[in-house]
Length: 272
Image (tube, rainbow, N blue to C red; front, side, top):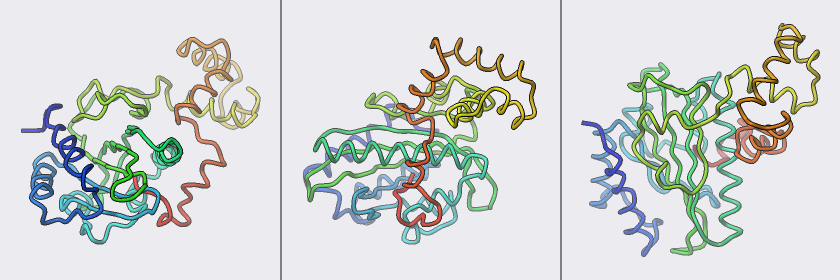
């Protein structure tokens, strides 16, 4: 039997238990972490904890070996990016970029928490790809030292067949979005189709409708129809307003943010 939404209380018990003493001293032999390991195995999930500021990995559940084929002690910063399907790499990169932005905000504010989640295809232990949901809980703490910590839960969601067009994506502070995945949760995300998102990106890059039509091998009429559909879906008066909104939500990648997550040195960026 899979977990229910209420079962995520285990994670909130984790926050309560280790917020008083700090999560730096967590060990795999801790009774609570053994319970967490059993929970992960039962629900085909992985549990990961890291210090975002110092880029230290503090704990990885044993279930990572069954899901990804790697021992917990071998998981490095940026490892999960290397398992992402090439077609989903940009989506994963967007989430990582937004995560770093949120972590910086928390560290500057000296308080609070943030949630961000995304679904991408990941390579499993057998070398084939499966649908994975990445749910990240970021929080600021002064115990045992000042930093921003990341709690990451990865779930195999292959059994779910209904997906909204585009990827699931959420970032904010609504704890209702930090729960075991269901159809409603997974349908939260971009309202735009992959083609519409591509057109939005090209408009953001300064291309005209004719230039976009040439690049995508479509007619100008088709591109303009997509532009109208984008405005209708969004309720915005212009695509530029859509671009601004998507950028604020972390659904549109800017080049300067991409530098944070360069795969040339994946070990230097935080995991998601």
